[in-house]
Amino acid sequence: MKNKKIVIGLAAVLVVIVAAFSVIFINMKPETKKGEKNITVTVVFKDKSEKEFKIDTDAKYLGDALLEEKIVTEDEYKNGDGMYTYIAGERADYNLDKSWWCLNIDGEMAMVGINEQPIADGDSFEITNTPA
Image 1 (cartoon, helix red, strand yellow):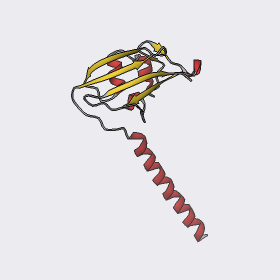
Image 2: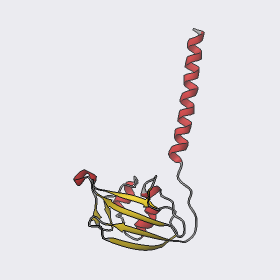
Image 3: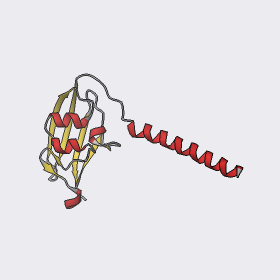
Image 4: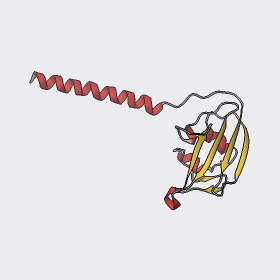
């Protein structure tokens, strides 16, 4: 009986610890920088052509800056998951043809979605229509 109480107590403590770390991890976003920023976003389309956008913004995150410039649609932005079908008017739809938009920073794939990607003055991003 005593061992059973100890096991139940330890399980309860473990559940509380896991729950606390889950809440902290879910609410963590990378740090942002305040103030006006000048960023460059290059969109690489399916046909490999490119369009460069020079953006002046006070936004903290890339998704906000893209919405301000109407590079992404408000409906998809409001979805909140940072997964976009249309960028700069071109569609990349994994469910349709297995293509998707890949966010790259300095040649490396980003570790967060567009809506969670912090921006700082001078940053450059590349968003590429990536076929399957």
